[in-house]
Length: 247
Ligand SMILES: Nc1ncnc2c1ncn2[C@@H]1O[C@H](COP(=O)(O)OP(=O)(O)OP(=O)(O)O)[C@@H](O)[C@H]1O
Image (cartoon, rainbow, N blue to C red; front, top):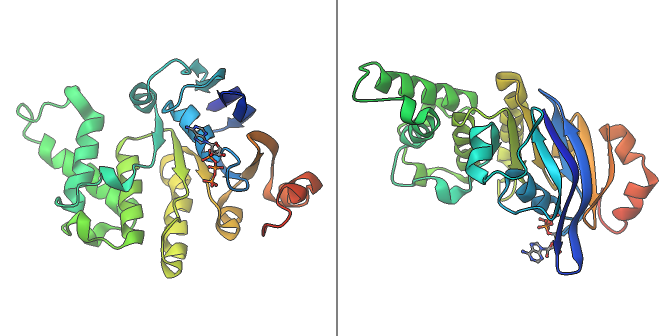
């Protein structure tokens, strides 16, 4: 589904991402971990196209998308969680997701021609809100949501784009610890609800160990290991990379 081949990003003499190769299959959940500054977010940026790789390729369903702009990659099914800034605080939660659904349906969806269109968009938006557990919050202003709820809204916006591969960059960051278990269950449901593959960077080891089918470990821009969570945790090279940090 997603294949990354020898992907590198150099800034001057420094390889921030250094020849990373990995595969992600349909319905699979791959966690990306590594110490601070290991290159995890940079790897995401190369995959989505918000940074142009110095070398290597990104393939989506066998098609080389390396040369494509971010929005083209998104249209082809590569979705990344929206940053909070892309949520319209003055609009309702449902309106935000409706905009996402309309953006996905694009020009083929002529609201002025089809009487049922408005309802169809609303139904899809409500489906996405239900998937993330925000059904009861559709009428709330997005700006009034608690942090954990905002994260759920960002995931609903991601779902509105109907991606086949979803990239989540530290979705638990800033979320109150009592809201983490709920958000973990929403994220666990993503592969089940959509059949999509998920690639997720996360610092909370307990969270990522409970979600991931496999773990990719980055260190100084390189991929140290990519294996089942059990094998990765038992890997002496990985343990060494994390020396001094809690694994
Ligand atoms: N535009 C840039 N120019 C130069 N160096 C950069 C740039 N962006 C990131 N870096 C450096 O690349 C390294 C990797 O950064 P990156 O944010 O990808 O790591 P990370 O693993 O996501 O870190 P963290 O876990 O702290 O979020 C860091 O040393 C960072 O300072």
